[in-house]
Each structure stands twice: as C-alpha cells, then as structure tokens.
Image 1 (tube, rainbow, N blue to C red):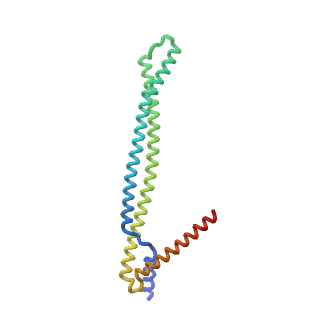
Image 2 (image 1 turned 90 degrees about the horizontal axis):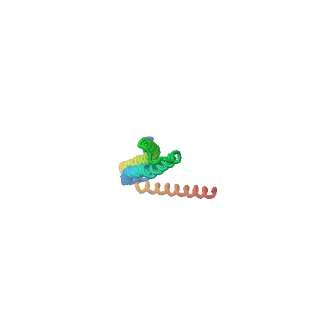
Length: 194
C-alpha cells in the first residue's frame, strides 16, 4: 500500500509538474541557434568591411590631403627662413614622407584598435546569445522528454491508479487558471504601488 501511495505521489508530481511542449519547439530553438551563428558571421563581416573601408580612407587622407598640406607648410616655413628657397631637396622630401608614414601608421593603429574593440564586444554579445539559446534548447528538450515520459506513464499505469489523460488536462487547466489569476493580482498590486 505504501509503495502504491509513493508511486502515485511520484506519478502525480511528474504529471502535474510540467506543461506539454511540442517536439518541434526543440527543432525551432536549434534553428534559432543556427540563425544566431549566421547573424554573427554576417555581423563580423560587416564590421570588418567597415574598418577596411576606414583603413582605405586613412591611406587616402595620409597620402593626399595630409601630404599636400604638410608639404605646403614645410615649403612655406623654408621660404620664410630662406627667401632664395625654390624646392625641397630629396632628403627634406624623404623626411616629410617619413613623417606622413608615421602619422598614417598612428591613424591605422587607432582604426585597428577600434576594430578589435568592436569585434570583442560582438563576440561577447554572441557568446551570451548562443549560450542563452543553448540553455533554452536544453530546457525544451528536457520538457519534451518529461512530457513523453509522462504520457508513457499515464498510458501504462494511469488506469490502474485511476488517473486519465483527460483528468490530468483538467487539473493542468485549473493550475494555469489559478496561476494567471495570481499573476493578474500581482500586476494590479504593482500598478497600485507605482
């Protein structure tokens, strides 16, 4: 008798303890995981293309706009100091070019530093998303397994202990209705407190 009561308690907790989850929900959650991975690849590619574009802009700025302005400034200073100045020597020109290359390298380092910052933030974001989705998939898989086990237990032992699938559904509906009423009362109380 004690064994039968214990069995009924375990069976009731399994039966009443979880809602039914369709098997397709696990497949859908796995598909969402694949979509997250695909979105990550696309996002990383987009970020890299953006920063590659910025690199090309830095190259253009350094060797067109900055180079022209710097050469003009150097020529003006040399002309101010030497009225007979006509043009830069090759050594002077090489020094200006080295200065331009140094500035360009400085700007490119900043672009790369920002690229790495953005990519790291993306990686952290997608790790959290993927982990959350994996957790949901795992929970859904467990719920499906429990649901299948519950159905098998009901089919095998339900009639012998007087429990039917219809009765279980009625109890689940009552529990859900009570839960919704409690939730509504809590939400109303929170609104009053605001």
